Length: 309
Image 1 (spheres, helix red, strand yellow):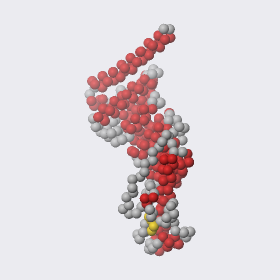
Image 2 (image 1 turned 135 degrees about the vertical axis):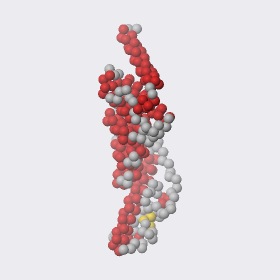
Image 3 (image 1 turned 120 degrees about the vertical axis):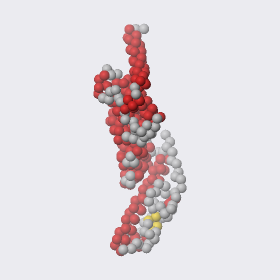
Image 4 (image 1 turned 90 degrees about the horizontal axis):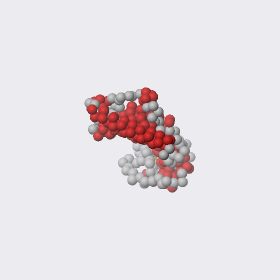
């Protein structure tokens, strides 16, 4: 064995021993400290100071702090804790030490965002963590995926979720379903123009027959939702002008100077009810509708569209 090889072996052994010793030391200190101190105290809460103190072993220190973050979350989750005061700082220190430690973002967001006892109830800190991760790993579409779901599941901010999924869909190698998620979120947000654009883009950019069929069904639903919205506005205008509701779709069409009776994408005329509601004639022919459904209508189970790689 050469001198260089011996040096490498010795250094590797020292590094491994140091890592194990650090973890054991942290565990031992946790055992002898009072529970309250374990819950709410960090030895060092400055990433900059830790980076200087790590003497170049940033990756090793990041792994230690990531291990500590997981242990902290696991213990408090097991005990149904109502607070996770040190979780966000532990994750922020971890990622500051190693901005490319992807599990710290992907799992960290799921630790931070949900409400206690399932998480820290800090979706804002989860978003901050994920934004930091994306800034340092812009070619990883899965980080956009995780961030989009924080906006979707925790904040119900469909517009933001749609924007994030759309941004992630532009990353080279991103899963094609990112565009599907972006379109679904835009639809939930009521942004039908954006939803149509995204579903059209999804249809044109994939050869997956299931995804294309799903896109077509959403585009049909968007068309009906827009038609019903516009026709319902026409009914309101008619009432404001005349003081009464139109008695038929033909009367409404004449008052609005339509070229004919408005029809759905299948060519069936929309129905005007006696109380001024616009409805589709055959709601079972349209999946994903949110408007134009008859009162009391219960849609059948939607068909499942599965993505195939």
